Figure 1: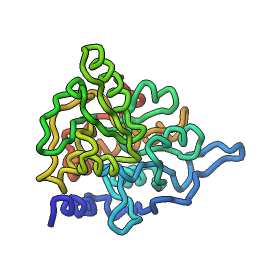
Figure 2 (figure 1 turned 90 degrees about the horizontal axis):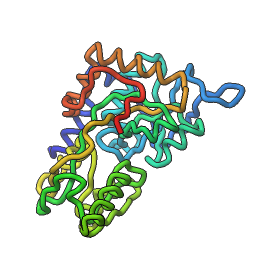
Figure 3 (figure 1 turned 90 degrees about the vertical axis):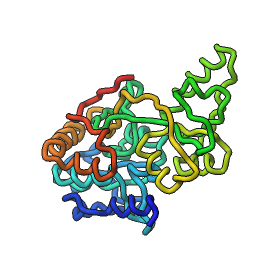
Figure 4 (figure 1 turned 180 degrees about the vertical axis):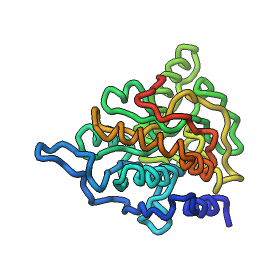
Amino acid sequence: MSPLAKLRRTALAGVGIASFALVATACSTTPASTSSDGESTTDATVIVAAADPSLSPYNFIGDDGSTWEGINIDLAAALSEELGSTVQFESAGFDTIIPGLASGRYDMALTGMFDTLEREKTVDFVDYLAAKNNFLTKDSYRDIVDMDDLCGVNVGIPGGALEASLLADASTACIDADQPAINVSEFADLDATILALISGRIDVTPNDSAANAYVLASNEDTLKVSGGYLNEGYFAAAFPKDSELTSKVQDAFTAIIEDGTYADILDKWGIADRAIEEATLNGATF
């Protein structure tokens, strides 16, 4: 069995919450409950959570083509038990998620999203995972140290990724130092970005360490990781501004951190080093 298959099989193993069925199609048709004035409510049986299904291992569609799997799916199952409401995932392109929250289409987002000061102007966050990022390249390519080590390099990222602004700043620094600019290409999602890397259309993709490790599991002989960047921030669940659900989810995260379920889930997915001691509200560091 390949490392990737083993990891997917492990994702379905029990850690106390796997029997809690959190199964949704890639395009859920269950709407968020609304009040008479059209505002999203938080006392519904179903909480609609937006997620990009290409962000393995955080949220992805399993081999059956319909079942959501991943770190966030396991966390959502545990949160659902604390909340007394089912968190149901709805597929969304990453760059459409924050507008969807702002418009009331989704109750929350639980995907691979950084809490940033800029994003906090539009949505609120509950931080639940420490950031850790590195660079994915072909095994034959040189090691990358940091963003400042990418002058003249062909870099690919998913559309809407935070790395776009980091690369823009780094490219400006390259030009100011009389070095060639960074050549940045944006793709539809992470899967498309990885395909571009493997096919040689790009040389480097900067990404979350867990996502890169997941990709490496099925490409051990062809890809590698190196370097690091932006490791002081947090991944977070996002909510429409001033949603009453925000504090409820923060309390639910606190409960699963304290009872050990949170640690079990992170350990199962090999990211125990990403754990935080408490879920914080709008704790952006940049």
